[in-house]
Amino acid sequence: MSTKERILDASLQLFNEQGERKVTTNHIAAHLAISPGNLYYHFKNKQAIIFALFERYESRVLDILQVPEERALQPLDKLRYLQDIFTGLWDYRFMHRDMEHLLLADAELHARYRAFFRLCLNQVQQIFRGLNAAGIIRISEDDIASLALNTWIVVTSWFSFLRCNLLSADVDAISPELLRGGIYQVFTLERPYLTDEYREAMNQLQQQFVPRPQWLETEESAEESAEKEQRG
Amino acid sequence: MSTKERILDASLQLFNEQGERKVTTNHIAAHLAISPGNLYYHFKNKQAIIFALFERYESRVLDILQVPEERALQPLDKLRYLQDIFTGLWDYRFMHRDMEHLLLADAELHARYRAFFRLCLNQVQQIFRGLNAAGIIRISEDDIASLALNTWIVVTSWFSFLRCNLLSADVDAISPELLRGGIYQVFTLERPYLTDEYREAMNQLQQQFVPRPQWLETEESAEESAEKEQRG
DNA sequence: GTATTATTAGAGTCATTACTCTAAAAGGTC
DNA sequence: GACCTTTTAGAGTAATGACTCTAATAATAC
Image (cartoon, rainbow over all chains, first blue to last red; front, side, top):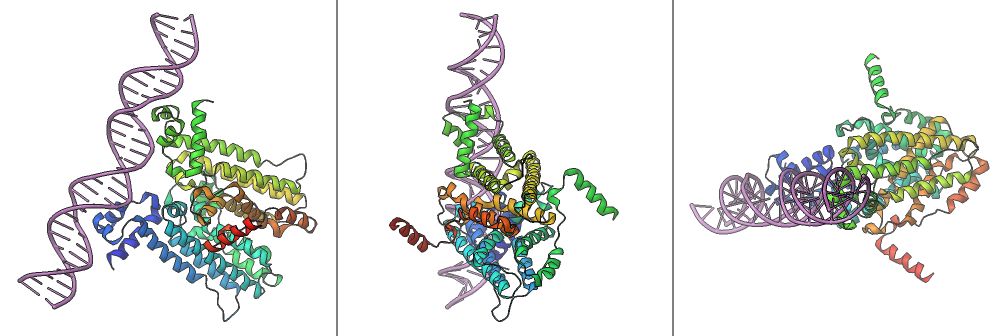
């Protein structure tokens, strides 16, 4: 693997684990046992590393959000979209964490992100139109716009929400397991629009993602439920 | 006004305008034409300033979220809740911007915030129960929990969303005017649960907040619509 | 082998920023 | 006015972190 790629991989890992703000270029170099000079030979600055990671993230997300043209959407498509998107979000979870600061520091990235957002919103709306056409939900065009935006906000804010509200202040407390609650929340957003025909089926899908709401636990209740799990 | 209060006010103003990350304690002192030493005489460190501002924010929000016990909720209560909360969010908009970092840097604040969040979530659920009891919405207990959480996420993420997706990278582009879109989005979250009896009335309320979706404009369309407004 | 280019090391720089320290001024009390 | 406490000034410190510079080494071409 080329040094350039190794730098990107290491940066992604460290950014995800500790947040972009806390990871210095010197840390990245030390982690790879290369010199700072070497790192700056491959990337002109820290922003360039972030930009390259964004490009990876962007293409991954846009791939996921494709709508099949040759066939109607099915309930399981919905599930796949959610799982893939949240997994992508997990793999690049540093991104939406410091997004505001990243964009403020890099006008080019900001423009790119805005375009990316508009594309995503369009695709999400297309998915809802697809679900509507397939008779899975029944929703007006106006509501589609609002619902797509609410979906975007909940999805992109999910990990921020967790990091702020989980019991432990430990960053490592965030795990892929916690994706489930996010998926559950997005299911809820659309639930009111389900048609009678599909309501049962979709609700059953959603049931797989009922979270143990760790953000509601107090210090004491957390200990209790941990004990219960040990006993059970 | 005491120096302590002046420091808090100036900090709030600068944090809101530029973000906590960019405002140094030296900036705050310079803004007030006092010495750094003076600032540190009143607050032991930067975190202490932030903590004090959080206490202001917290009591303001908890005041707003009270549910009247002596009477049933009315459609206009809903409106008031949203307007007051979003105004509070505006006045302390730096808070949810760098929340993750603030909490990571201050374990005491983190614990306090978690408790605050749980209180808020409870109050929001109480409000939904009130609207349910008043026959304005029809919703199950399970859905109340999910809806309250989605509402929390959309509300607290609204300004982050705007800052990331507005056309201009200029921070000052954010204005109280942009609250409207957030209020509209939250109305949408509950719309599916409205009873036949109140649907019309609530939809009319929501109509006051239809935003011009500036986050969808491209560079060109922004110019066009600006021209239109000038002509009109 | 030699010339050229691509890659790497690592010491060092420069700006930033949270915070400290000492001493002076202001305010209050008797 | 003397004494004490509170408040303020402002120079200074120590750590940090993004980035630079020079020279050495590896790779490639001919």
